[in-house]
Image (cartoon, rainbow, N blue to C red; front, side, top):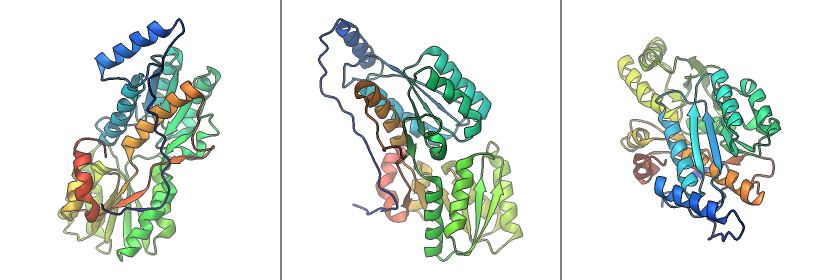
Length: 334
């Protein structure tokens, strides 16, 4: 087994319920709901009521990272007999409106990201007033508790950035571009700030328009051409790593390309040496545990984390571990 270097302990709650025997007047309804879940998506492991959970993220269209989060959430929803609703918008006000819509529907639980927390505060307050439990996931760990969420699941973005800075030091890098593809995303700013905190060399932030890959490639390429001393480029999302590789080729640069997050392409590129390393925050686990913890709260009034975030990363993934993880990345769970 490859040995992973990890900065933080990962708290994971498993919630495979045994057969829960319903003896009340709701027993027939529960059985009917469980059959519906089994026929629609798979076989539920419990016969608790068919609660409805809504996940609302800040994902833009085509972002494969969120496909992995959603895969984890849907798997847990099958097991827990949950009707799962997923929606997303990369515009903060629209995301807040989606949360409001879930509150109006009277869902039994909400999972939400807080990439731009100020815009989401009012929507989460309305959910709290309506008595709907909320779990934040992926971004917004600093605001989660203050906004009334049960807990936060994800990685600490500053700690993740610090891990990157240390890894760049270990590799002897001296000058790094940190590529931010979503302006206003507090998590992205925290990542680059973390890199700057521990990296012994120089870090320059490069803001790009993440919805236009051609523009991203041109911006990175122009910076590499203008400054031949840049010897590392850190992208903040897996889809941007391949674009940075193309930009490096365009510029005739030898800078190492490293990235946050993992997907099948990143795993393959780590294995063949095209990329130096990746930071994995385990998005499948984020989605899965968010649903599972909401189910545990509804079923048993359980909470996890003791008021602190439940950490799913960071793990530094290099060529040595890539082959082991590639099979999971290809199936959409890493």
